[in-house]
Length: 356
Image (cartoon, rainbow, N blue to C red; front, side, top):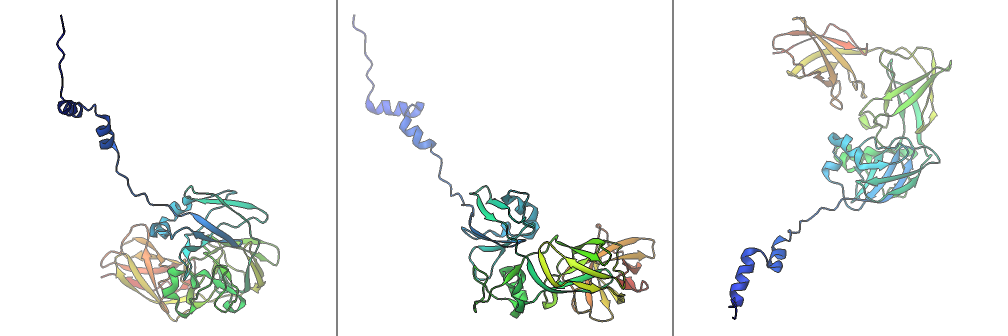
């Protein structure tokens, strides 16, 4: 007996395979993922160690705004993987006229050390530590607890504020362009002072006592000068008649000593509320330099409240500086506050502030 053979037409067979998913060609074509455009990460293509605290890096493409935003500093630090305990101390800053070359401030390099660095897990680059220190012409006392060290353009030293794109608009005729070797259009060579964030210097008395003084933020290129301020630890003051010598692991100071003298504190003339979180203080005269920086006052309300406020960096206009209330507190309407300088940086303590 012959078995009946069921014949399936080619058309019906193709339809059946398609429905059941057995047509591998069709299945493979349908399962292919769409190609997505993957953004290529910038990578370091060249680097130069300019001095003990500064590296110049060129990337394959410009860094994004997020990769240079100061508000993202802690995250940005993790993008750079160094060996030998090195790290960046502030965000990379694009040089004027450059496409993707940045000034990058780093922790102090150890002479004789070979460092490696990669960006976002990219290829490692190596460089030898620089033992070059910045040439500083002089130092001088500016208040009872603060002194400055000053360098000059004519000595072939420039603050990075003058040569980076981020500060170009605010620097006026101080801004200029240098090439990859940090020479200007006339071929003059410059040392570059990068960000002084978290930098310290040592001040030594004529009796050998050493004190670490911390950089006062936003003073390194203020008032058109290259004269960053350094302040003694809270509560300490310079002793009149004592000779002090300033040294640093990132600078050579030519005239490095001064004899301390008594300075008259700044005089507060008035205080006026701006809103419930800030107010302005007016001195009796323009101090001529950034002496508000880092200063605090205590507001003692006639309702028994106590509020601390701190100077808003770079807000000074002549004798007027803006202070912001701290610790999420607010100025209360109708309360009269006595403005009391913290740390004896100003007098008197009889100026009052009344909010509307």
